[in-house]
Image (cartoon, rainbow, N blue to C red; front, side, top):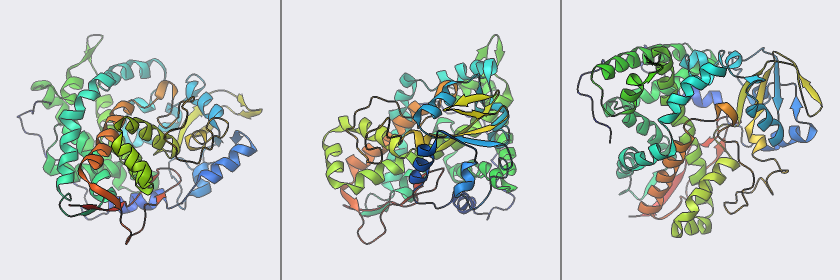
Length: 421
């Protein structure tokens, strides 16, 4: 486990309005659309490329940072994969500077070309499979155990609100050696960063306050390094120089958000689908070799993010239709992962399906998700925590069953269960 750093850090400042309900606003922004997949499929059947902003098909509120740009959206596996893999034609900076660049700063997601490769190569080393596998025992399991201890004697729980919603965020805090007493504030500010998309001033406020805190943390770890992630990033040298502070701060801002947000959503989908089918749950419980299959199928069937974006640098023809230079291209990964030309009976949740095609839940190409290996470790430990500790767990018949909602950031808000004590 990482060694604690003894010197004090300044406290993380709360929002100026501490009563502002970040989570309620975020919940409203992502909407309550039940099932966007029939809409995705209808567009795919009409053609791979459509001139539209997909968010505006579903959302009640505009993304103020992306609204009004020249939007196209691609559907189906082949078109989405082509855009993701072609980092020369379809780039990131010109599109994400409007959104993630404002929320996080100069993060690798907003970079292109040699600059992106240079910084990604260093950051990616911290999240290689052999590295994150060691975190399973040292970082992930203690968080799983701590959260479960709060409800394991009650015989009932909401596995979303009591468990999945918190565990990946708390793992990130442990990774950064943050004060557990401040975890609720970090969670709030991590989520608040994205409120810039809705025009809320709490978005840039959270970005600024996290930046001040992380700058102090980097300075502290350089002066008194341990064996934790931040100490490594603060002291690693590339071509004889430290990594730029603004890049590291942006990375840490994005880590505390994306490192928790997407994983909790994916884990919620995984648990909901297994618990809806008691026979399948029992098979996975009896045969743990099925856990990785269940995780990959959950990621394919309803991944936590259905849409990402790229910027089209030059006129490019896909499926007989030209996407013009300067267009913002929405990549509907939700459509790709349920493309019937690639996945047999794609709307069926089937952990035993043949895996001849890689799903795109973590995107693909030069910007494929850096944290995908950590996400799989976290999902594994979270599921095994339920399998190992909640005897005779079943969905609570007296309460609503899990409902996966939103057209973009998908997850169930509640997973009410009962179990034997």
